[in-house]
Length: 452
Length: 179
Image (tube, each protein chain N blue to C red):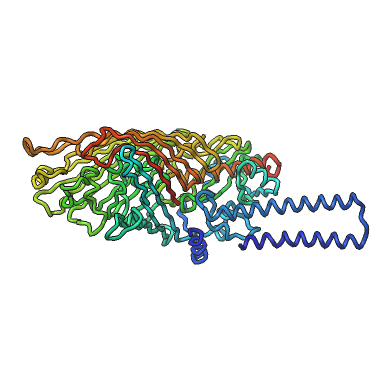
């Protein structure tokens, strides 16, 4: 508004004074046709310049509220029209744009799934709606939070959930080292820490990083983060872990995601046993990311007949040469002492697996771009097994390993604007009609997501 | 809504500046042109025609004034250093771009970066991609500049910023307003 007024004033002044000048001239003398034409030309030149400047100011002002895509400092709009913008302010301390201490952000996704062999099960879901904020207390300390509603409505009679997905305080000690304390995302795989819909291909998150790595996986604890100039990023910490006492052998949830069914999400989390984790990622070559993660901790929380340890590790690589985006990941989990734990569950449908693992490879290509529109087709192949191996309980009692699921996903992400994505894909599952994974049948997925 | 918060925050926040600096602008200038013995203050002033020319090329010039440092060795101009800022995801990234007298990028340095993710833009390997590029080249993520997964917005915004700086200097060199 301020800009408009400031810009409008000289513009109006110019027009008014020009008109006044013309009127005065008309009475004082009679200029020649050529002179009048010359003056008109001059005026129209001036007008064109003022218009161009006005447009520039308006563009600048319009670009500011949607800061990330426009990439202009948030306080730029508060600068008076005549003031110089960032290039100046970056240099001179006092007039440097002020950064907001608090920033709101959000992401969300609406997913439509239509099983091709069972269209009666078609669903449209407000899968996630997330609001978060970051507040900076000082130049080195900030708090980051995310509050999520899943499936639209959360009440005693509805399927939704309300959950705090992140709530941590970060303190930077040096440009290399910082620490986070609170409820944070575990550094595992490629998806868990960057799980917004604009960051991954396909309507649904990949299976390996939901069934094996239980994205969105967060724990309460403390972690240190080191960012080194050679491209290495090290994260390590101590946190809460899983609670195997929650294992429900009567449900198929444990077969869908063994760790997803026993995660605690810092909801009165049993904390007798803490877990330890570390992740190392290297990005020393532009476009290439190589990394791995390790997480381990006892998970019976001193409440079972034995002590069982959950271990999960992964190796991942992502390479983005030019328009290509190629990635691959392998993840494997193990749970110890499952023979003792499973004895109580014999005869029930879902026993605790000893090992579970999966891998995927994905290729995406930016096929077409036009201004903000980006069309990126992709293909992903996954194999995963949530019950690769079971501990020996004796003949007739030991469950057979589950079948390995093989999923092909073909589709495209269409970026409408840098923070908005439309998605469409087709997923083919093999084997079909797997009783251990009853939810998985070939399907068409459509999705809308945003993130800012 | 975000813009309301930003505006409110701008109004309420004290005039303090949150910045963890890896280096100052002066240090960056010396790193970029180690052979220079003086850095003279300079300025590119864009007229409306130049602004429109940049607009046509898809560059939002953002400012009519572009202050810079002119790196000199004796009376010879080695190049120019522009210090600029863009937003990564939420927070400002301050960086310096060195452009040689021929209009080609000599070096890029990150002066401050504070996002939780994406500080990999500081890695020498990523910054090297810009060296030698001129405004005739795309300077776009996904074309001639590789993305850093997990830091997409920071990569894109700093790349867009560098393209803008190079284009402004190139234009100024061509129309004689910068010598």
